[in-house]
Image (cartoon, rainbow, N blue to C red):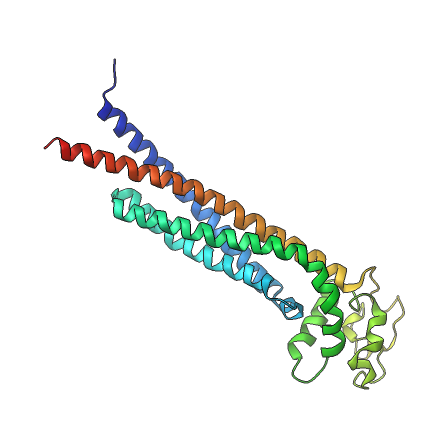
Length: 259
């Protein structure tokens, strides 16, 4: 039995409608992942951001937070647009998808570019930041960041514990006899930084630079992968939406032609 053109078009419209519903579910999941990665990056290790010379790492995470938030709103808009089958709403949804696609693509590219530069930036700036600013007036955020860095990653000094010998903290007398900050100690007790013996302090090959570099590299890979991956998902959604709009437009034309 042959199927009329009208029935075939109705079948295509229903298929695209269900496909868009499935896409919207994946879209919400992807948006939640984007938002979670962005917030996790900014909140979980936010102290370390003050130790970086550039704001690219934080910018990439902030872009993901913005994109993830937009996904929540856009996902709701998409559901309403599909249910109502209104071309104006679907067109708005289509342009929102393209906008979020571009935002997440930018975040992914930024993360990838910074991934190539992170090692050189840390080598150039981390030692100077730690030795010049630790325990100095007005630099409390850096002091806290350095203490947390050394405790979290079980390291001491940017390259090794000897870096602290030339620091303003030690040379100015602020250290009160300590040769390293107390945060270098395996077990922190008042003035424990007076002994820099391996049994007392952390001595890691490559120092804190190698540890922070690995941490940032891992995070940047996640940011880049999530940003670009979800951006590709949204591009597929934009194609589906455009096809659905075209089918609705054809149906309207055919309905108008019958009068």
